[in-house]
Length: 161
Image 1 (cartoon, rainbow, N blue to C red):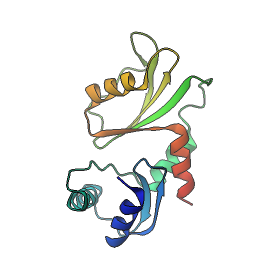
Image 2 (cartoon, one colour; image 1 turned 120 degrees about the horizontal axis):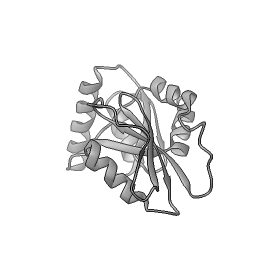
Image 3 (cartoon, rainbow, N blue to C red; image 1 turned 180 degrees about the vertical axis):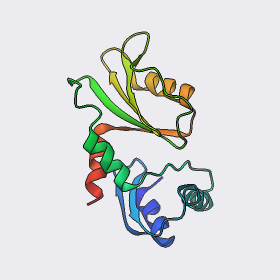
Image 4 (spheres, rainbow, N blue to C red; image 1 turned 30 degrees about the horizontal axis):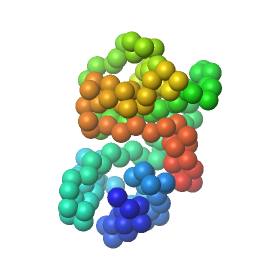
């Protein structure tokens, strides 16, 4: 969906300081907060009305994003050009914590940490493709999730100033 249209829709809903990042559906805004569930439903309903098809919505408070960045779940990971760091956001709390670290059979993908509604994972793209890892996440945790690269998440945090 075009980010300019998404920004305009949220502004028309009464949100302020609406900012988009990249062409990925990442958007920050300020406004009166209903419950997270009510707000997610309001935005989802409006997007479906505007675009004509259902669009999944996951929300996080800015303070929660900043907390994740400050905690840096990847600080102990030695990175290299083929290593990707990911945060997966879940709409619902984990029913049970995964045994960590969880490592794929080919050892290319690992889930190294988990919080209430977040998973932290690493992927070595020299060994496997991103889609294989994302398929595992959806199969295990459902389709009501979204995954962001750590670099993208730090850029989102930069919009929260």
